[in-house]
Image 1 (cartoon, rainbow, N blue to C red):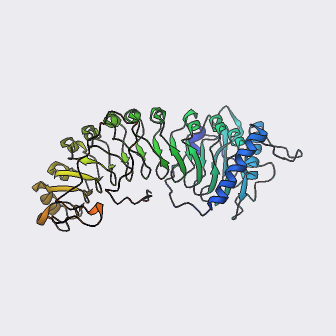
Image 2: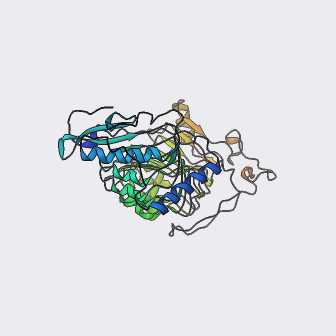
Image 3: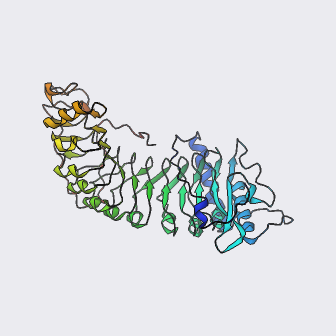
Amino acid sequence: MGTLPPFPPLLAAAVVFSFLSSSCFSLTSHEAAAIARRQLLNFEQHGDHVHIDIDIKIKVSNPRLATAHRALHALKRALYSDPSNFTGNWAGPDVCAYNGVLCVPSLDNASASAVASLDMNAADVAGYLPREIGLLSDLAVLHLNSNRFCGVIPEEITNMTQLYELDVSNNRLVGAFPDAVLRVPKLSYLDIRFNDFEGPIPPELFLRPYDAIFLNNNRFTSGIPDTIGRSTASVIVLANNDLGGCIPATIGQAAPTLDEFVFLNNSLTGCLPVESGLLANATVFDVSRNLLTGAIPATMDGLAKVEQLDLSHNTFTGIVPGDVCELPVLTNLSVSYNFFAGEDTQCGSVLDAKPDKSFEDEANCMGNERPMQRSAGADAAEPYLASCRRPPPARHHRCDDSSSEMPPSSLLLKSRHVQIQ
């Protein structure tokens, strides 16, 4: 890809946000397990220094690029499949010409080039991440999404002191939340969605100065840490996991920065905290497909910038407030598949005045007031279609302990792995 002329900060030439999301490429469980075993065996046998054969005749132009040469060849050797021959030109001394590599003048020496970005998005390679990847200490952007990387994220990623954006989404990475990413000092964009990470979300995650956090479509459990209120992120997506317990009341403290709040398809319980209405800058608020109950808080009229509000597929009751229907820039509102008994009259007026607004309210308990409502007669055969005669009982949970893990429930038809783009 060559060397670019000097310009200020290193990451400025490399950082381009990518929100690409697609389903994982095929890899059998047996293949994934074999790759993970080989990765761990390498670590056990060779410690921090996996042996890499490099032609000693190759002369690299500066020490930074020599180190990057070692790292990239370690990564190439850790691949078991490269059907599109993405790394086919990863040979010879000029690492800046390798596919996916971008070089810029280094921060402390404008006359010396450094590898600032590695972009292997959708390369369809299979393998694992070797510890040598941490030798890319000048890297500002690491994009590895939509591949078949397995195993774990190595601890040595903490050596990437300039890393600003990390995207390893759409792979087969496993294990607990990769705590090493929390020690990457300049990281701002974290995308680990569509993998097989599991266990609790560490409270420290929301104490880091991130701008975007994508954890959706993994297997995270336990509760949402109270520290979420201290997050500086503009986007927090925790959808399609198995998070339980209540939404912390501290969420309102994230109001200055939070723009997108997406917690759909988990096992969250309790009521919507009244502090949710403090998220005055939020444009997307989605808590659909959970086990939330109670009424919509009156404070939700504070969501002055919300465009998409999805409360569907829960067990909410009461009346849909007119103030929510009248939110000034709201274009999509869904309260379907709950147990609302009605809507304030303003809701109908707003719909008539704004025919382009999407409003979904089917499968509630509004009788003849609205079409496609739940039956008022005998219970339906499926629990998620419970009739209005015997709605699911209100659940009373203490919401002052966000670490509590709540089991999944059969009350709702839960569609696992709803796509989040």
